[in-house]
Amino acid sequence: MTNIRTIGVVGAGTMGNGIAQVFAQAGYGVRLVDVAQPMLDRARTSIDKSLAKFVEKGKLTAADRDATLARLTTYSGLDALADADYIVEAIVENADAKRELFGRLDTLTRPDVILSSNTSSISITLIGAATKRPEKVLGMHFMNPVPLMTLVELIRGQATSDDSMRVAVELCTTLGKNGVEAADYPGFIANRVLMPMLNEAFFAVMEGVGTPEAIDAVMKGGMNHPMGPLALADFIGLDICLAILNVLHDGLGDPKYRPCPLLRRMVAAGQLGRKTGHGFYTY
Image (tube, rainbow, N blue to C red; front, side, top):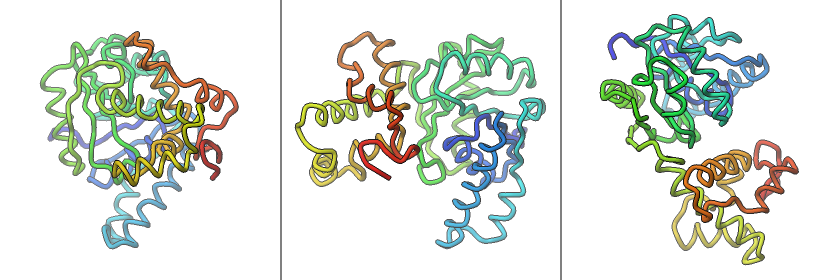
């Protein structure tokens, strides 16, 4: 832990920029990498806005905001991570893409560096097998929005060492977050429990059991959920929900995880939720 000063974050989407922000706020030098410069520009804008809200609410001083931004640099190539001390991957939720990236990171970074993935459902054992250091590969699944949510799901692969997990737990503590260990099963804990509930809500809409507004109202008012399942699915991204449900269905072989046909149609139509302006609701 004392040797970890520079954090490499790969992927400048919603999760990646949130992860970069919390590490920078905690005092680490952060190198945020993405192949697309527009993504890096949007990430910088998003982080600026997020930090401004913290200042506005009195949770962060203007000086701390400026110092946080000064600790964050962006790059369009992985070579910037050659001397990073810890890596967090936050690219597309695709096993082949992650394995290819981890293979490259394995040859680029020092052998002692832990390579972690923000995957929400893909096997850490599978990802780790693409490297020569599977004992130093683990899952570090942050929750969205990263700057506000305190839980981090830590996933131990088949070969992940106790020492690697200890370092990840300690890192979570320095970020002011609670690291909770999960075994390497499809969906881990969070999505193993959450996605079947969301999927059932999709079926309820498809079958006319209730409107999205009615279903969300029941779950919020009757079950005390802070957000209804359909609004939450739109927030997560319906394409992400479908990808996770496919991982659960393929990995566990149980028909109860079969993605709702309505979800498949909406994703095929490009109705992905908040990020496209239309999902179960219009934004």
